[in-house]
Image (cartoon, rainbow, N blue to C red; front, top):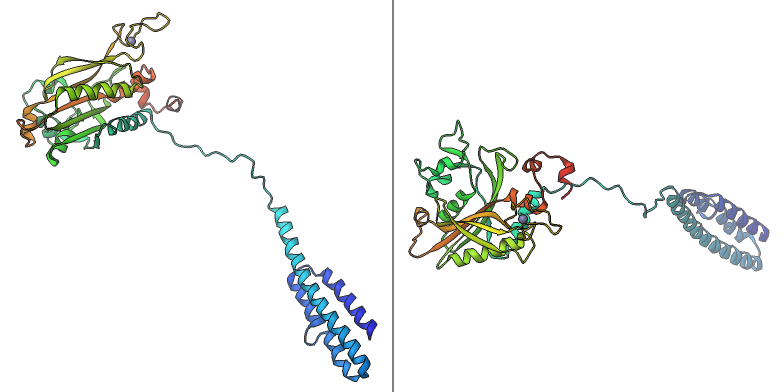
Length: 348
Ligand SMILES: [Zn+2]
């Protein structure tokens, strides 16, 4: 009896070793330790033995059974481990290998510049306002003090819309000022940026170009405020605190007085020539660049939107964004911006 138990135990350990999955282990368990398993047969046979043997064999049989049950748990753990090991082998990867970098999109230099401008003016309390590109003549001209027979309409070669009466492609971003003032009471502090359209096309002009325009209206807004905002803005735009601004009298129908704004040439820094003595071509050696148009909002424009020019005043300014980016990045041809040549775009 004793040897029989020992040999059964040995046999079962061999079978267990051969079992390669939890299901196979379960089979072994049922075959040996199950209700109608080999071990139970032995325990059933105990009753025919003498008392002394009943006790010793019974004890041995029970101990062996417990031992084997522990072996089963152990074997199951081994199998689980082996499976993990083979998974690690078959699905091994090197996490230090650099990944494939997807081609990312790229902001256009003008868009990039517009974001910079937005940040510069936001710091001075200006909000961004927006308006339609297909505009009513009413907003593009009339409300800006440019009535139908006004010679200023000839100053801007306008695209009129054939099938849409009294509509134009806006020639300037100024109509956004009017739309904002109609909707809002002073104080107002806005900048607006966007596409404008004129029948113009050469190295420095394109039929579509971008403009920035600023407007500040409130009690006691003066020319001093305009000068301070312009001076600070151009220093920020060209990232040079030595940039100076100067103002020359000029004419725009929607401001009175109107002026041209010049700033120190950011290429030669006002010297007229580059450090190596080469004459500066951008400012034609005068050291100044004409960069913006500006002025105090015309009282008639304020009246047009229902403001009282006796109570509030304001200033406005505007400039071409494309030209500013050209100056900043030393680009000599405007069309480069619109030809979508990636070799150009990716430099920014
Ligand atoms: Zn210069």
